[in-house]
Picture 1: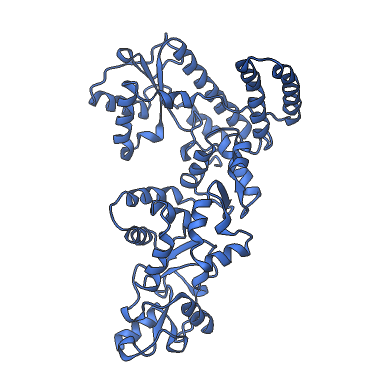
Picture 2 (picture 1 turned 120 degrees about the horizontal axis):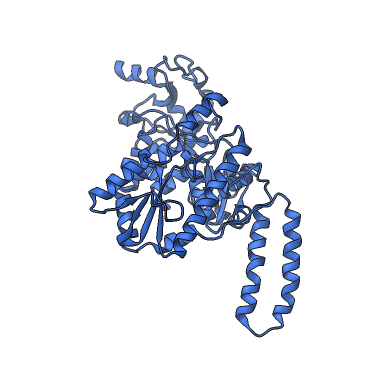
Length: 462
């Protein structure tokens, strides 16, 4: 994220940033008050001067701005200019936040962090439930997870390696003892040091957080099967799988899981294309991942919100798929999205094929005539079905006709390289020279390629 302001303007903006009574704080106070909770503000006698204090529950709430406190969400992305300054400042805030919460717990207070992004209107029902659970003492596990020891990357990994060797060498004396707990406790520093070493393999100048280290590692090996254990090592955290999901859902990285590959293996054409890039989808394990492209999909976060809304509906998988594709006409949709939409069931790949070959929806892939698309991507070209008698064309026949006609309309010569916003011609369709009702077959000889405009003209005049 490059700063759009010059240094003088940025300084003026920073001088006006509030530390109290921010919009997120005021919004959360309103939510609490409406739900019958009474509180105090910014008690100076407590560590960190918590934004909201609820003495009755011996609980405090911090309302953190995602940018300033380093949240793992789009709002928390750090500037790419003056990186040293911003990393130092935000990391200092993160360490201070952790220290404040530890000190509060030592004093017997329970602490909860609410992030700015959680205060969006569509999240408020879930937020109210979370607040009630917290004040009722039902989410202590969540609190303890937030405070688990993080890895501590070092710019000189060799120092960590030497320290690890020393710890393991000294452990030989512990092995001679009979006290089991003594042995376990003696190994804890070695575990921490090993994790620190793994997270130090990628320099902090390239990746400051666990999530950054994961995507940095994947980008160095695109279209390569990566074990989850590798991501655990470079991330330095136990919850690396959650970070992978954040990269996919919030940041738009096309990271395919082994589960999705296994389900796409049902389509023999997809299997062949994946094998060409060195990946056999039937052999990818559930805990393995592949970065399918090295550029971010900036619109992914919005699509995943739409995806979640449709996924909750109690309708058939096929209906969910076509509804989602119709909300994203002309947009490349990944197999990972459709797998999630279908609830990780194996049938989604088959349902897409049915929508295309039996119901006439123009859903195209690399293997069905759109060689410009990446492997494992689906695109609904237009929000319309083919004419009823032009449906139920098998994919191999469809591709053979397109190849014979050189992917051009046989009437006007239009092809996809000529596509423009002003031109109503948007896609190629197949047309039966002799209709089904007149005995026409789904054969290469009885089919021709037409653009959508010429196809409409033929049917209007017939």
